[in-house]
Every structure is written in structure tokens, then in C-alpha cells.
Image (cartoon, rainbow, N blue to C red):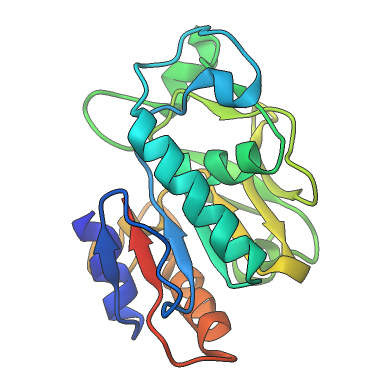
Length: 215
């Protein structure tokens, strides 16, 4: 949670953190953070390698997403947050990456680093070029995309590393930009400051209210 708060604040925003909060209509945007696995029944699957779910968090974040999506407010998703956005829009997940792929994306010792390729013309492509390095800390991935979403970056194994829906002001990333920006910049990956500054610019386009951060 602290890394998300620090990134939003460093980008000039006023974070409003909360654990399973109710939707706050005074906030200009929603940031859905990383965390544990989503209950598989929410996307029509039985448990196939998911970690035990936090059902209260699942339900709270689905309600948050639906409220902000209904109002057309900007939404940023990170790791679990990206997966939840896709599930909320009817997508599903790969519950446990095959061992050979999983070893490239999660380690008990901390973030790993790998290359991704970006969709030409996308936000990531414009900021960082056709291919670049990001951090990685996940054993699941987005499978079928939720309605309205498009993939804008992919891992070398082919699963989505970023999604967006520009008309609905949604962008989401499987990697962790809050650990690659501002005080957490690292020399072996891109600097993700632009992600947070762009999100806040969109939030402020019609309102000067602070974006809410959920965890």
C-alpha cells in the first residue's frame, strides 16, 4: 500500500487509501492495487491453482470498479487490479502459469525483470518504444479479455502485460509501476513516472478531486 500512496503523492495527487472501502463519489479516479488471487468462481472456473481468496476484498473491489466505471471516471489497475478489471468485464484468468513460465515471473526473493512488447500507437509504445523491460511478481495472468478491453503489451510468452479501454479511461498493467517510479526507480527497467502522471492528468481533466486508492 505504501508504494502506491507514495507514487500518487509524488505525481501530485492526493491519495485516499482504504481497505475494502465503499465507493467514494467525491474522488476523481480509482486505483486498484496488487494483491492476492481472485475467487475463481467469479469468472466461471473451479480452483485450478489459485491461492485462497479474500472474498470481502473481491466483492468490495468489484463494487468499486462498477461504481467508477458506471460514472465514467478514470480507473488504473495494477497486477491483481488489472485482472479484476478484466474479470469484472466478463473475462477470465490463467490461474497458475506453467512452471517454465512461472519461474520467469515470480520469485520469493522479490521482483524479477523481463521484456515486454508494446502495441504500436498505444500509450506504452509512445512512452517507451516497441520493447522494454519491466518488473514481475505474479503467478496468474489474464486469459480471455473482458468486454471492451484491448491488450496493449505482451510478455515474451504471449500473455497480456497491459490492457486499456481509452474511451472509458481505463488502463491497467500486470507489472508494478509503483515499484519502478519516483523513489523506487531502478536502473534495469523503465521509469514508470509517466504512468502515474498521465493517470492524474486524466483524473483532473474534469475535476480537481483526489483519486482514491483501494487495497
